[in-house]
Image (tube, rainbow, N blue to C red):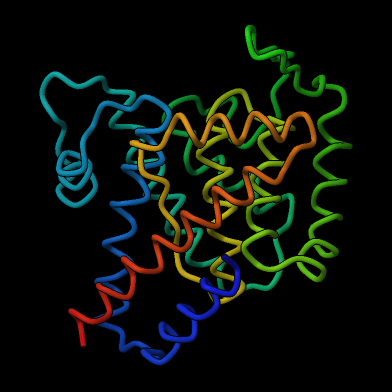
Length: 244
């Protein structure tokens, strides 16, 4: 799969560099697509068109919870920071906290960008996340590990591992899944790959593969993310062809 992904990347690279107008069109497309899909995976009820209306027109959708609107606006803000951070070659703990702050500040300013102060146990899944007292050390270790992972792993495996390891720390009171997908895409962009979207329709497979990583079985999740990257690349190529 990595070979197939890299073959498509080579095709994508032939379109580069993109002019500013095309680049903005693509960024706007993924701002809406990634915001919609990432929020929908967590139960947000806004559909794709409604997400577009909220982001581009600043309107509220009648009958939909205000929290869903705030999540949409927050994710859009975090997406802007994602594009800025993509120009760097590193990911710091401050970057991670700021992404969460941008996403969550409209919902809960007090806990935005701040590690949780309560323990989290997922009943029925036999998952217990690190205690609040362990979070600073766990996050520091994760960030330190990124340099080695970036060097030793294929970029897609690196992005998948970052996603999984972050989720298994679960440092924030809420929004961990959204931040994990932003970080995954940040890793991909920094390595020259395109944004990858996980469609809500595959949520069950996504959660199942992700839960396996809590038991140190990363293979199903890496395989799943690789498939998502491959499908997103094919979509990206179709967009590039239309913009040619």
